[in-house]
Length: 193
Image 1 (cartoon, rainbow, N blue to C red):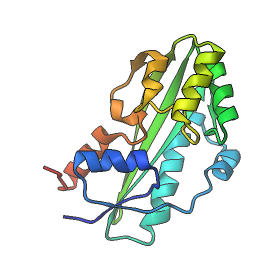
Image 2: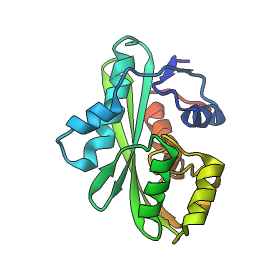
Image 3: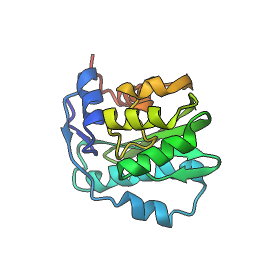
Image 4: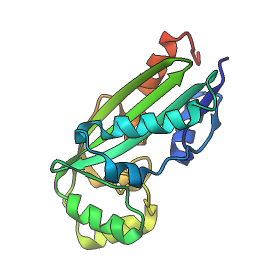
């Protein structure tokens, strides 16, 4: 089996990989997302691709003989990208702004192996229920979704915030699009089955 590195310290992405049966190691890339986002000038629709590639590259340059998987998720609302919330207050403010409306989650994956690089993106349309301030506060206290792109943990209680989700890959909402990942690896002769 070709060695695989997940370029992420996210416990949710690690759990996704483990649940699917991947044998891998997890390394946290030395990438300052906030700084990269602040200096980013290309079309906003390509931001998640850019960040996923930077994460993968940071690990791949030290591990050229291993498969390296980078992933990133960006929330797009009303034509703007929103940085991941860093405090519970920021989470509450985000959910207050998003409630009763629809936003997009752009989840990109970059897979590097030797001299090959493949980037895929899944765009999910997320339609949120109208929520009262007390509902938002209760949800935030239960899941404490600091650092989550949308300000919610869809794999936990966060799914209760939505009345409609449109996506080609539901695993992407958690943070790692497994459908394109498996397809990329299969093309390279790497299968978990």
